[in-house]
Image 1 (cartoon, rainbow, N blue to C red):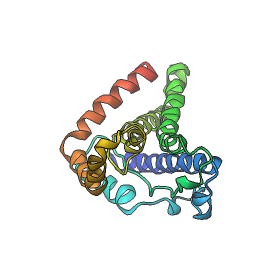
Image 2: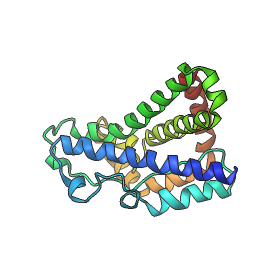
Image 3: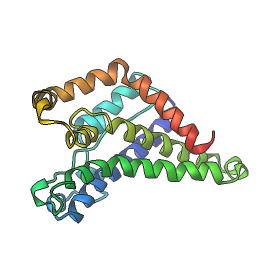
Length: 207
């Protein structure tokens, strides 16, 4: 991957994961939980959101290994579900806010690609590149975060509907989820992510 494109992708990735976490924080705040606000996490300041592995090490490993896509995550926004006004569905709303935000960004910029005249992008090819990367990265983030393995959002969404009889499985995933996730990233998940991303990219942009 070209170094300039890599830097460009990393900047888009960084702000996409920050917006993802901000969505969690703001929804939690709207539900009555000020934890993220008190922790200083309701900000676009990237330093507040950097996760050593998810924001730095993983993207670098993917870059060095020649991965066709870059992705990662920010430090999770702290929430206290006991503060939620909606005790039944509050946790679900907070969990789903991040992926929905990424999907919304992908759809918005994807529709711009679809409906803005091609002559504009011929005149300004950099805009097409930027929009394409925003769509791609946000789709990847949404799909990746919907994997039902902790600490990803997909687990907390699924957790709301897991019967009590699967408690041992839940405990196991809490203990070893991050290791399962790392294994999947480097041994198979990337190809599936690329395939699903390409499918939705074409669906949204018409390309």
